Amino acid sequence: MGVSRSGIYRYRITVSNDGNASALDFTVKDYVSSNAFVLYASDQGLVQNNTVTWSVDTLQAGESVTFVVELKKVARADVVNKAEVCDYEETGESQDPDSASCSMGWD
Image (cartoon, rainbow, N blue to C red):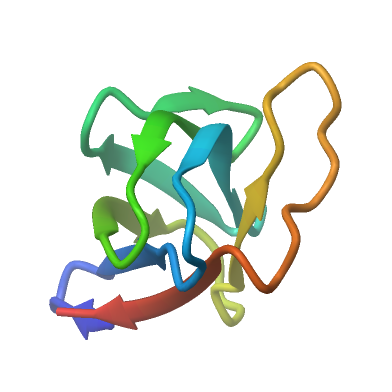
């Protein structure tokens, strides 16, 4: 994670389809701790209650997609950031771990 002197954190969230079939209609959610404020979410990420949600229509087998989120620390505590891949919004269930993986990095 890249941190500037102003306390801005920039995360890259990469979701890969490690399976042998397309992953269809799923969401990626990034849960940000309450001691940070979301400044920016790439690719039309929807920000609600410190959770960023991206919708993905199709991710072909072997492909990956990367999202970026920038946070500003607003309290003297560690910033906790957790991302997950979920089924389509109607169920909110976690995807089969054999078909998708999620990793988080920073700039």
